[in-house]
Length: 258
Length: 92
Ligand SMILES: [Zn+2]
Image 1 (tube, rainbow over the protein chains, first blue to last red):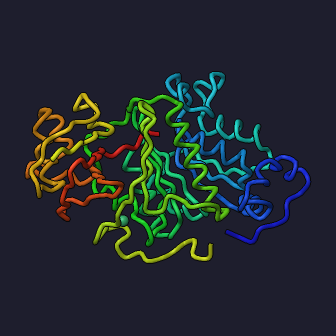
Image 2: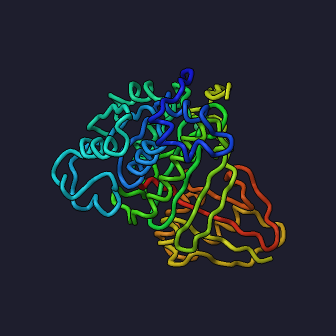
Image 3: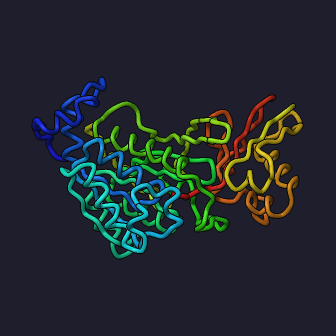
């Protein structure tokens, strides 16, 4: 992350309520302004991540999301609207984000993470938030994040449950430590309420903000799991896997300086 | 001793219930209790949990007392312990 510049009056006016958060202040806000976050897919989860980051005053979002808006997006993908049915999701999402925050710089790509774009997109981000619905995409992003030593917030949901953890390559388990092979039982169409993906999206956005602004304690080496059926939340430590083919050699500390 | 096992994500759907309390012998390990549990709910549940050699599927997560248990490290159980087992999820 580059050196933080001062805030102007318009920015102070928008962010004044969060500038009062202890441990954040103008320094934290300036760091958000200077930061670039990659959000992989803008569905029920990533859309809320991007929206919260736009609201919080992130300077730059790098967004990857393919396809056109379809009716079944609209129960959870809060950046998509009925009016945009049949038109590109990435354009709808970009328009919505700029309505909220016209100061935001957006690099928008109308395709999902793939072998051809992963390295470049990860290279443009200070922090990555992984919100893709397929393990193949998640593993690809994880590999690239570890290779470029970029912190990655890993969040996911299923039915009424969700997980979130934050990966610092070389310091915490990576996604391949947690899930060393492609889970054969995972299906593209998963049961989902928007409020569940939105809940974990807000938590993931908060993890990204914390990483960028050195605020609080990110979920490093810890997995937060919650079940909205019972409203049970629990956090458990997770372990790096000896000989992990992705992060086994990694020793870096991307946020070493804080 | 009594051990409670909680099922998450696809395992919960396959079991048709969120948790099961089982009786384990003194000195039993987390791994042994999981192998017993695997037989309780039919083939769909079993194959989500274990491979054909009765080894935990590589991407299933097991937690005991807030710590991950790796299959290769035998973990002794305590009376009244709760295990949480979850299949990987990736929904967005
Ligand atoms: Zn790893």
